[in-house]
Amino acid sequence: MGYKLSRRRFGQLVLAGTVVSGFSYLTNKALAQTPLNIVGIGSTSIITTDQTVIPEVNTTEFERTDQNSVSTTDIQPVGLVLQSLITGKAQLITDQSTPLLEPNEILSGFTSLSDGTLVLAITPVTTSRRQATATRITFLGTPVKTLTVSGLKQNQQLGSLLGTNDGRLIGLVGNKNGTPPIRLVDINLQTGEISSISQVKFPNDERVSNLAECPDGKLYTSLLGFDGSTTLVQLDSNQKRPIVLAQLKVDGKAWNNGLQNLVCSGTGQLLAFGAMRYQTPNAVYSIDKNSGNMTRLEDFDVTQIALARG
Image (cartoon, rainbow, N blue to C red):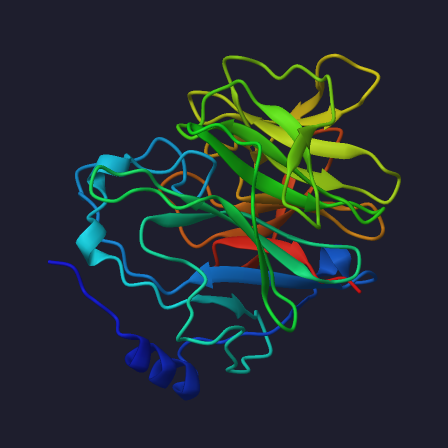
């Protein structure tokens, strides 16, 4: 039986400090000289699923759980909140009366633009009970601004948003079930229209998700194998295929569950966010680009992260 959380009750929880929001000031010995400001986002919606369905990858990765296992009557949208590792200040980022996330929708992308504006990609989950709404991007400014995304086919999904160093917004488009073909696209910040921007050909037997750009302009993403193995690759417009760097691993064990996000600090440190299969919570890891070794920095129980900029 699904538990339904009312908007009024959600507001009470926020005021009580059960749900917190703000910016995260991440410090660790590995990054002691270059502390990072990180934002995490999550949803307070309660979703009841068939407990017998065990996803092969983390359910917030590019492919979600079987859509047929989601009970549409057990989803109560009450908005999205930013969450902090340290500050603990209770403050909603949006009016509870106009929730950002509607029933049968997922948060498929999260990033920050060069001016510090946070951007979400919200994607409909197609079900037989309800006609899907349009994919949209939402800018968490004052006021909140939303654009309908155009240029997607019915079976396609926009995800893995990235605000580039030069002020653009790019992302990855693939099939809603997570299968190729995958393409890198530019998203018009004024109209929401997407257009292909790269001739890089991604593998047809691996999922592709997460985009990060370092200060030197190099783009990175991750490839996810059917067994959960995750490979760090670099994208170069002069190369037709991704440049394989290393398979990701922690404590000598292969990372087996894809990633929620990749981000790159102002000093060029690549960071991963996610959790090994069947483990919780998600955590932030630093990545050695040459070896693929990941060092755990901080646990962070949110859905996706982005760097706070501006």
